[in-house]
Length: 97
Image (cartoon, rainbow, N blue to C red; front, side, top):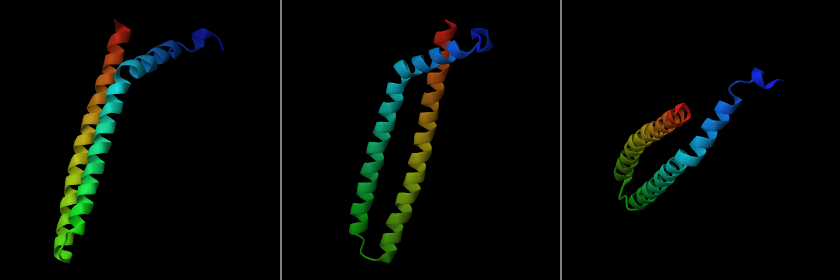
């Protein structure tokens, strides 16, 4: 296949390289931070469950944990989405420059 048949190969390679070099580190750091927070929250949940005095307390702890986890997941996904969007936008700006 002639090189002119694939006009976006170089563009794609540049974007991939730029993303990996500049912004992947930020994304990896955020994911690592979120994993650590989620593990700490799970450990705290288990600790609280072990102290539950009755089934009503058990279910209250369970419901509180699930509500908190959904909220945290929503915030984390929003932040990761913004980070990826910023990275892609930065890659386009660097290519255009």
